[in-house]
Image (cartoon, rainbow, N blue to C red):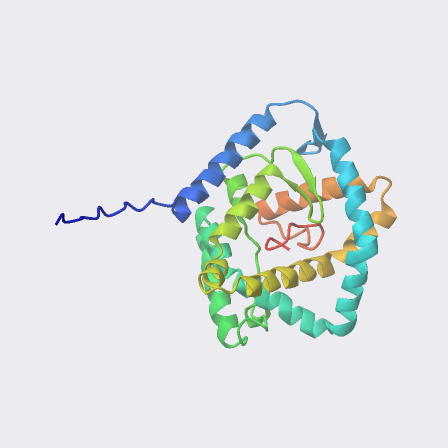
Length: 268
């Protein structure tokens, strides 16, 4: 009888988290660097805006506004009706607390050791005394929340925005900041845990709550900009760039609720 031997199959290695993160960062760097050399730039003070897809972006914004008026805004009004302000504040605090690992890593990547220390203090205080982050006890003690994302990290590393984009249902951003958003999503430990524990549906629920929280915090500001601006598209675009510059410079003079943000995640 012949002895049948089985040759063990070699496992195909999947890219590590750091490899994927590096790939995203490199892609964002390459795209943004190339985009920055093109024309059609808009200069507003010290801010340079590159919007080569303005016509398409305006069409997408018109679509988003129609969806907002027909669906999103009524949902937000219902959310505000059934959820008192203190409860909405608790939800916001809880979501910020969940995001602490991402914020901490980005502070380190930016070389902001003081900011990283504050993140650790906030998550420790709010997770214990603040009952899982529902209450922002650290904020009451003067340790303020500071939103950080990988888009800001790329900016600190010298990566420019690249083309301005308006995405259906999500809103305005840039190639660099969308690259940062996806890197943060991949790096999110909460996502790792829920997907490994077969709790994808629960993660989707978190996504929905996060989106509601962001849109709730933005609604009044967006309504105000729309009613007081001659060109709503240009006003939102300008405000977005000013807001991102303020975040990168750790400038607290502009509220983190003054501009539409991509959900997560971000900086809200």
